[in-house]
Figure 1: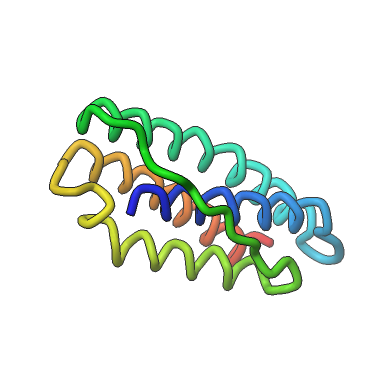
Figure 2: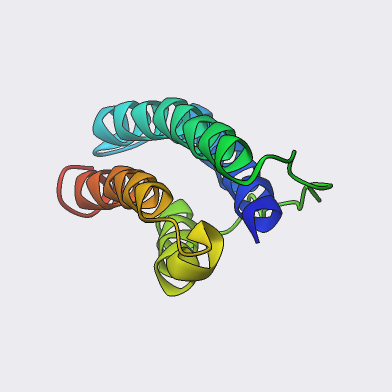
Length: 122
């Protein structure tokens, strides 16, 4: 399950980066900045999660399948879907490790922050 988290995080990171570049119109600067912070932050957070996971379980993660995001889809909907997936699967991803669950909570906070900014500031 950790491999799926990594693949999904990389995909949403790329989608957010592309949406960051394409932001235009009213609220575009706020959207541009919010997405920039988001794609920078989630990679650092998932890196920390993977390193802790590997340290805890004493093995490297398996093969990560990188999936493509629909770059024409609304980025707010895509980020919301990924956030919901993490929330639904956080206990399985953490595999009963509370420190990893806490790191996942930190990752989710990054999603919540960008969702707030995209809904109310952009």
